[in-house]
Amino acid sequence: MSTLGQARAAARELTDALVRVAYRGAYSLAMAYWFVRRPPVEGVFVGVWHGRRVLLLQNSYKRLFSMPGGGAHAGESHVQTGLRELREEVGLSLNAAELHAAYDVVDHEEYKRDHVSFLELEVDAEPALTIDRREVVWAAFIDVDAALQLPLSGPVRAYLTDAARRRSRSP
Image (cartoon, rainbow, N blue to C red; front, side, top):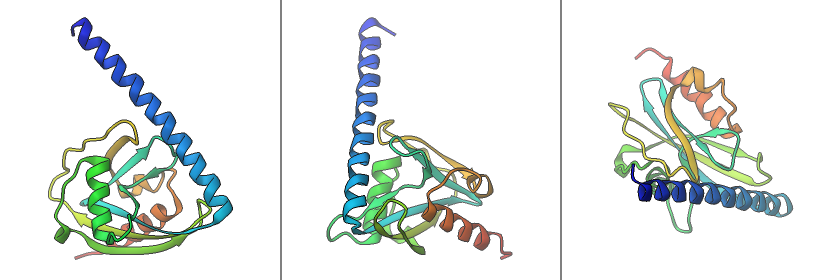
């Protein structure tokens, strides 16, 4: 690699690290706000499955493993939120018809009343993933039983427990 290429790579790594610090700071501020206000929010996670393997990810600002997803924007349906989050977090562009509702839970883990809806889809092959190394620092398909051994957020654990039970049934 040329000296210019090395300098660009070093600058990109530094920028990525600074953005991760900003994400952690913003998340800490959001947690403080949620602690004081206890707002009701709507969120969506997407379970992308290949057999008994599910797509998990690690956000730079949280210690718990999660799934693609996030808060709904004003006027956005659950499916629209799920499709947007899949594109933003792991680079997957899917069709709305591929997603179906799978699970709902209300959680208070982050000092907010979080109504979380889970959508899911089955893929024929594990797709190539693209992460930004800023908000999302790791993403991979992992066996659901192994996933349940990891530190997970409450809603993700509840969904995966339900999904593992549903997926263990005989056809």
